[in-house]
Image (cartoon, rainbow, N blue to C red):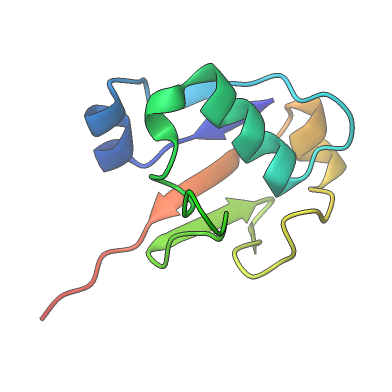
Length: 97
């Protein structure tokens, strides 16, 4: 399946913005993030907290024009994402004054 990383994160990690990961079993956010971190260990701790496994505050997840940021990590993602027809977007929010 396809994942699009935020440009800042891809630069820091030395990865392209678009990455492909293989997920065994149900395609959930947790499974995708596990596969992404296993394939690219430099991402560990950047998208979710290394201890709690919770999403970092300024990271959001979008798929099929829906915000999955506050959904349970074990909830299945849309079938179009699982098939690779749609991309899972990992978006870094920006704040400041």
